[in-house]
Length: 84
Image (cartoon, rainbow, N blue to C red; front, side, top):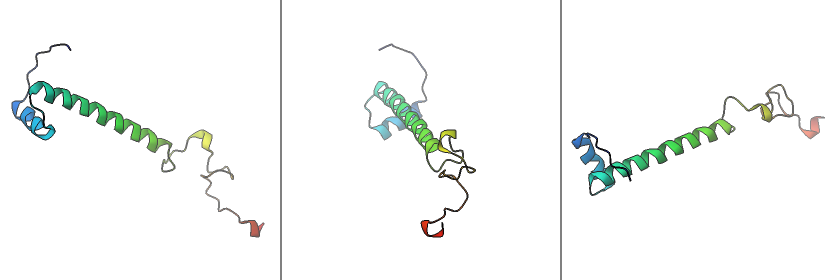
């Protein structure tokens, strides 16, 4: 690993170490960096899943549109087999 000299807020570092249960500054900083990377990746994946889900307000073009009668996004009521 590369050595880097940085100034850290000692109170914030101590609070983070207490929360994460780390024993020293190096472990605290590395764990905090690991957690933020994991968190941001999870957030981006969740955003991507939500954009592709049925809850999305902007359906992808390949899924149809409200004007397509066979689309799941159609605003027209579906006709039952009995009414045709």
